[in-house]
Image (cartoon, rainbow, N blue to C red; front, side):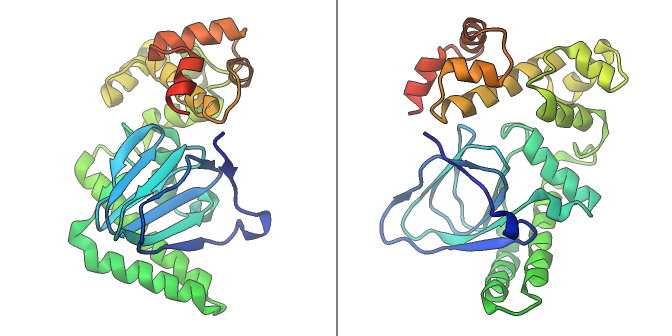
Length: 277
């Protein structure tokens, strides 16, 4: 059973931090998910980080972003160390570009929007920002949360610039494609047809498919199926039955859900659960 963690209500307005200390033995956390962002800064690498069933190496001077709802598991090796920031996305709603960047990590799958950022050219800046943040966080000073917020904002900007440089000027943060993916991430349980999303975005089905093919190489229907499959995998790994997953995803009946899942993954729901148990 994969646990789901959340930030206590009284702490949701503030950013929390944890230190990832140097290990004296191999460490492997249990797979889990949470209702907030986790922003890992690895100063010393070693090990792997599995995010939504995809494995990413833990490099020195790297940042890994885990969005709310994603299932992840950190497997750190000896000598690895760093820090992790925990925060609600709403903390950054005042910044349009930052808000869109974080939304992309919530709405796009990890193969389309990689959660791993290698920042070797910024090693000194990375170390200063996180260690200064930790010092402030532990200080008890009345302004400590503002200092941590400002430093985290700079770290996020480093990731944004890295992604912008790799993708070029055609950044996915704006436009109809992003609007479709955000709508999909919110409504995939109830809207399962391309025509529903096209209508909501004031587009024809042909126009929507042209937009998704241009941006992702896939049709809108394929992306709808991928979103359903990803959430089905997450649900099955929480230990619930195929029947319960079918209910959560608003399928007509469990048999229909099982047939859909096997057609998309090659495994039945029970086979998938056994593989990832």
